Length: 245
Image (cartoon, rainbow, N blue to C red; front, side):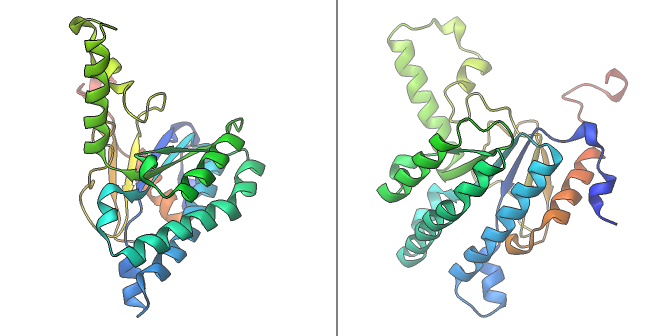
């Protein structure tokens, strides 16, 4: 029996975020180059997207490339950018056919021009899709995002667009790259690491965290179902006590 049958349909997370980790270790275990692990990780992306769409998840954010990843060997970064372009090319039609929209967050201006162009095309072509929204975090880091938001907020304050008294959590959130997107209810990290690695630090304030030793290329629909079943066993109190819920 699939774990899908154990999921309570009226308690599905609206937004799931995933730190996709373990491609390199997966490849090393098989005596192959790291890019081989990244290529096989694409299958796990498909599994996560399909399962999320089938369950009725509204947003799925995938941490695909951090600002720190630019420090990796150039040959690996170039291979990742090439893989990104090829994957987008091959998956665009499937996304739109299944009513799935694509968005990006992060410093996408730092990506190669060819990647920027292809991403812009897919984001535009899928903008009318009303099902699942897949958000790729590319050249993303939470510290970059928060710093950039603070700079823009200070500039608007200097331009007298609002008063100090108008600055609150909602206003600050509107300057983040996730403006208009609800915070994740569930964050999944694969590969057995127990940290969030500079990912959505503001947005994860009340998110349920789920860590699995499964390496990303081995992450399939059943693994996602397992995370959701675990999520549904938790009591989300937001500072209240159980009796108040």
